[in-house]
Length: 505
Image 1: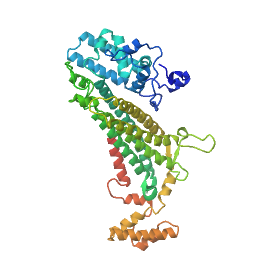
Image 2: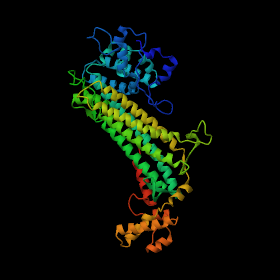
Image 3: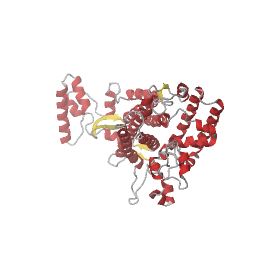
Image 4: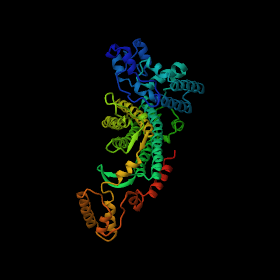
């Protein structure tokens, strides 16, 4: 193979090579799994290249190395390795249950797959796979099984196509990642609720806002509870996606029409935790709904984190000064000595846009794909893996950074009292006295205009002029709220308790 990738210095290539396949790299998964042409080993001959592939009998020549590298998805697939081993173990049960292979061969395949699974867990498998001309991780695992099991290894793929294998492996991966992401989101929500309870007991208020303008005073706990409520929805969406991904097992659908071999598909589905085998092979092998649902749910969680980050970034400005970030989650400036920047939350906000791009690209890929399998679907696999690992990394960083946020209670409560915050309470009191809503709105609006002209807030004199009794401060305004879901402290306590119950694993 001759390409620019071979001519690049080894140090640069090493820096561009992703770490061993696993769900994490240090504290967070590897964020930037960039798609790039794969560099095949220079020592590969045509014969060795052909032996690494799962097809080739009808071809007179080995593939062009550069084109084979272009079509390879091995790097993007490596996070799927553990799930692919599970998929193959279930296929062994389908083969054994249909008496397609002997008990001895079945055990040899189990032993080999167990060994591969251990290599994947130890991080040793990627290096082995990169040494061959494999199109994807599925072919690499098949080759490793043949190497370990000998002649029985050649029986593993009986009755199976990569089409049903990939579809099944991707669903297994989606289930695992969605459950892990839901746990991350729940953890963030629980931490937010912990802080909300502390601030509720402290009586911290903030100016509730619409259009980023002061609207009505609310408890800081109420605002934080809003965040936690959104995260609870995200966790539900992720778990719903995981449940949807286990409804129907594609394994045994073969290329698109099912198999003439008597595979025990029910045994394979049970072994993998699916509800039942799929009922239409053509749909099953081209169906990416479960993966796209998962990507959508993960993106929604990213957007919630992005919105919370936007608010925190603004609250940490000197103009607001509602929140401070511990040094351990901050960065500085190379020029300005005084700077203390909330980079993590800015990056979380930016990654929300990246997530939208990944989801949009995956949806665009499937819009024109005909029934059954088309190679376009390889790109959806890369998008789903990248998207879910990207979400894992970003949400983990967000959850960690949240623990370094502290609120300035005095500043928050002081700002809740300005901006004619109790004007709506005045209008409500007029309505309760019998005045029509529009008339009440008009009278209080005039009172606000007069106070603004005099450079003051609404006060007791305004109450006397209007002939009403109404809250004049934020705490009284909160206590006056009567509806379910309001910022009344009693309602907040009940809502937090209900959310905690919902967020239980």
